[in-house]
Amino acid sequence: MLDIRRISTSRWWHKKKSWTFLGIFLFLVFVRFSKGSIYKDFYYFISKPFWPGQFQKEVILKSIKQESLINSTLLKKDNIRLREILSLQESSNNDYISAAVISRKTGSWWRQIILNKGLKDGVEIGSAVIGPGGLLGRVKNTSLFTSSVTLLTSPESKLGVWVDRIQINGLLVGVGDNYPSLILYSKDADIKVGDFLSSSPASTLLPPNIPIGIVQSVDEPSKAKKTAKISLLAKPHVIDWVQILKVKNFNE
Amino acid sequence: MNKFFIKKLPIIFFIFVPIIFLWHPNWLGFLGVQPYWPLFWLLPWSIIYGSINGLIFGLFLGLILDSVTLDSNFTQIPGLMLCGILFGRIELHRDFLVGHFRYGLICSFGNFLCGTLYFLQILFKNFSYSNFLLFLPSFQNILAEVFLTGFFAPLICSQLLRMFKFSRRKLN
Image (cartoon, rainbow over all chains, first blue to last red; front, side, top):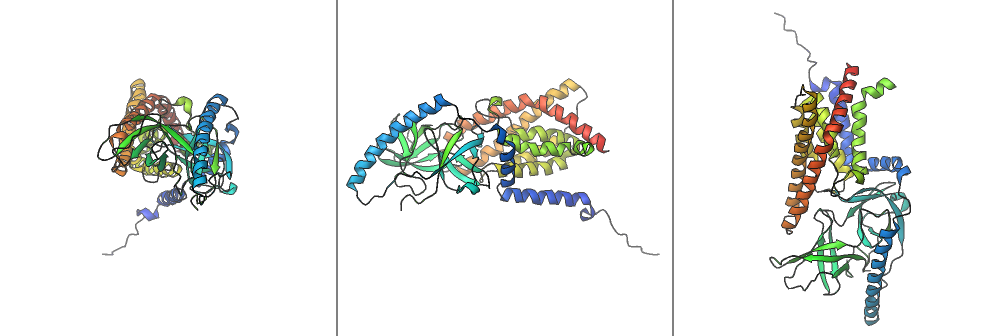
């Protein structure tokens, strides 16, 4: 008997389709690891005709009023403190980039905005993004033309904040709705509805005294910590124009 | 050229899924939540091409959507892959009208699955923080998304299914 060796053509590597799928898979893995920068740049070009115009006056003016009121109170206090502690350095920072919001996801799980300024405009990862009212979030990722900002409401966002009235630091954690939670690791902290939050003067990530929000409700204390719901001053679902503060070690 | 576009119709729609996901049209939202767009594409694709294809393209969609969202700790891949497999096991209903509304129920269920899996990841990651704070907004998110996805699915899925079938017929 002749034993004819049959060359199999049914192996997966003999099929063109398998290689196509493998190619697509590798490409998508590349897209994943480049944090979707190709997609975001593509989106930048096709969304260009629909970028926001300069309106929304009512909402913005109201937020600006609140912001300037809080800002001036903070600046007064800061000035007094500065006079007392002469070694403290200048805290104001005017080095910013203006950008338009070209994509916004402010509901559901994913709370982020994409801005029309990217690496080519000098945006760096970690920069603080502020809008009318105060802090919106921090730049998490940049592509050539765009930058993506994690909003304070995102479940990924955790930020050290300063409660000015009781002079205490707390942790602001996004929980996936419009009201992030403030966690104070002290059961006896005397936090009240209406207290306002700003970025911590001791922060190395953010410039000091950027208004963040107002305490909306205080929960029952549990296990040596106190939590409160915060109403943010800057409203990411309506803001079309923002400012990106350039990264700098703010405690230097 | 025209033939090429007809042939590649599902893939062209596939490319547009992340674009709509990023676009996030507010006027379509409910409680600030959007329908879960990838399921609208995945359902007709899996019904026509089967579970294995559903699984593979669930993975592909998950990879792309994970890369355009910033949450590097959480992933949409498991939910979409599971939906791809489940949707592939569904057969088309003879009655047009019943089939039409069935898409809504199936997509709602798929969305509930994806939302729950995503929520579990967030819960697991934020275990050290007060978890009860997460529950209420998360349930609201899931329910609003399930409602919206179920609401739009009959409209969008049946149209896409028709187009994908047409494209496949031209292919054969």
